Structures are given as C-alpha cells and as structure tokens.
Length: 76
Picture: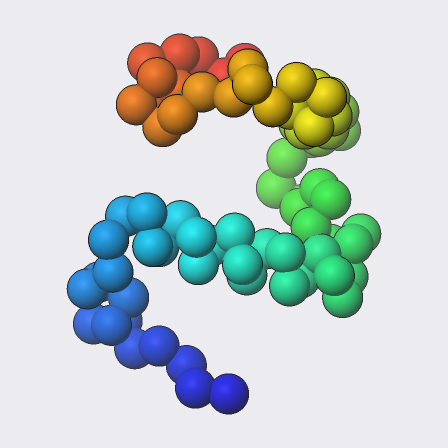
C-alpha cells in the first residue's frame, strides 16, 4: 500500500481531503465498528447525539446541509 506524503495531502483540494477522511473512517468501521462508533474522546451523551443525527440523516438525506451552511450553525 502506498502512503500519501504530507505534501501530497496538502496538494489535495479540501473536498478531496474530506473524501479521504471519509474513506479512512469507513475502512476503520468495516474492520472495527466499535472503534469508530464512538471514539473515546467524546462523552456518552455526545455519542448518543451523534448516533441520533446519523440516523436522522439516513432517514432524511434531503435535509443534509452543505459545508458552508453547516459552518454557520451550531452543532449542539
């Protein structure tokens, strides 16, 4: 497996980097679902909120905001 260098990552567009992050998380989830479901850096209640929002997004994908709109809104 070829690993991207920091300069190669820096040369990617923000959208490409976000896609790479998504790919990495999906690969972790496929092998170790318990690791990516709630990484130890957030509390149980925060994890529940994330889970609820992910379920909501699956049920109502048309309600998904783009990054510019989401940046202007509070997540909690």
